[in-house]
Amino acid sequence: MIFGHVNDLQSGFAWLPKPLKFAIDHLKKTDFAKLPAGNYDLQDKDIYVQVIDLNTKPFAETRAEVHRRYIDVQFLYRGSEKIGFAAETGNNAVAEDLLEQRDLLFYSGMENESTLTMTPGSFAIFFPSDVHRPACAFDQPIPIRKVVVKVRLSLLSEGISQ
Image 1 (tube, rainbow, N blue to C red):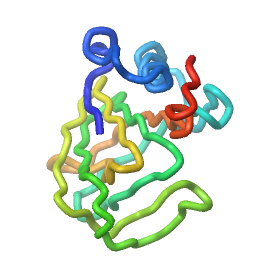
Image 2: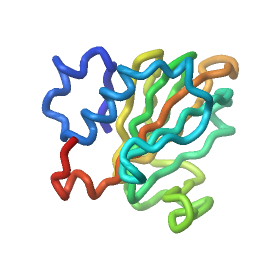
Image 3: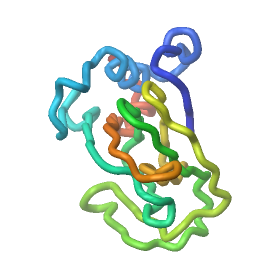
Image 4: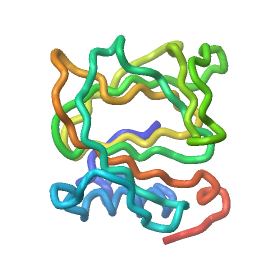
């Protein structure tokens, strides 16, 4: 898991692989106020964007998740949220397996969970080894706009650059 702010891309994250720098650069340059919620391809299905309007929920009403084929670059455009995260241990109980259909596996909980505080401009990169629980409320549920750039994991191992 990697956490940062889009304004720090050049100074703090120059070492990132090119597909991840491309994703964060897209987040920094795009005016997400003008885009309707939905999915947008950046590089076919290798790199695509999900613009999501939702309400945060109490921690107990959210589910831990993991992906196997894509890396999540989660970006908060508006609002505030907590995201739970932990390293994948292999010991979490599976609640729902949608890996074949949607590259999504839900757990009923996760071991050794910590939380991130997301504010506008912050991003978190979750790899397949990172379990995460997005859209958790601080005190009360609030509406947020978040953007998730999905980067096919194989782009990192294939050395494909942007």
